[in-house]
Image (cartoon, rainbow, N blue to C red):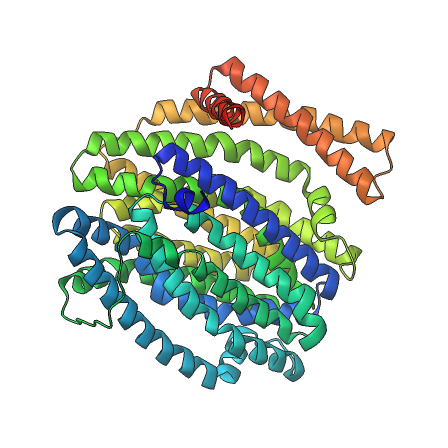
Length: 527
């Protein structure tokens, strides 16, 4: 039964629901992961080194693999399947697998050798002892890009066949691996258990997806055709995207470099805050974008541009319907969120206070971070990877300038401000260019929608704030149970208010939600 579910081909709606639920579960595991990390180490030297050690492996993975897979592989692979048949498509995959393993192995070995020098680049503000911890962690974590490379190639194949189950489960297993490292490996191996947990999680991320690829008819062959026409096209399409990702990763590195020169724990606080606010971005931004991407690619391949535009507008509306009220909830409950998720063990009040401040300013850019995946993938489906590249460069420049200007006044909070400003610039410019590229989007209708959702979100915020204050008078919020009850009641009142106002405005997205809930109830009753 599970195997049949994993093999199942999904519609856009089904894929969106599957991915959203899976991303939610994955992010909940991620929150538990961060709580475990915070409780064990606090926002101190070890977590600073841990998050800094992540930057180089993440940079390599994003630069060499994510650019190809997210922007170029799926359109090319889909084209081979439809025009040349599966045999030619699998030949292309084998060439990518073998070439990727060779390139990654060489690059990762070089990074392992020069890890001490790279640690100076990533965290110039660290002392020698803290830098050595970073080097030790980094060298072990370098195994993870190899596993992630194979895993994400498998995920791209599965997405091309609109099979999203295994792809959606993979991040959950990744977080389970890291949690296992903290709970079971750290007591045995010390801080190095963190790195072993990361590698274990990456291996599990790969393991869940590979069998599903073989079930589609793939057979591995030690085949390397460097003259394969698909490689040339892949390189042409992925180069701008790879450079764009490089710009994003440079932005992350710059923020890390700056944070390393600030108070101890600044890197940890920035990363923990980022992880908290990225939960709704993954659920409502990435899941919708990933689900609709194969459909957009297919519509462009078949030159059904009107349907392409309809799919984009519908998905844009859906993301906004969910992300704007979520922003209000995050802003309203930012202190409760940080205290509930991270407030344990070694994570003290000062750590909590700084993380709350960072989260508050990251929330301002949440809508932009959520919509950029859809905007970027719309250009990728049009086989245009240059436009997202140029906007990411613009975003990088804005981010760096803003960070340098703001950090002297606001410390690590200034970095959060800069991240949000850069994301907003990226989203706005991408949307404007896509509007002209598609020969006009329904701006008045979208503007009216955003105004209605904004008013509904503001109303829910007022009622939610009232519930929050009322509960603080009734129960003791200095305990975990009291804080949890206060948060749940405030969320319940706020969400109910939002749904009532959304119904009053007659938003079609609300009907979609009710239809999905009705379908879930029917499935449960049938089972």
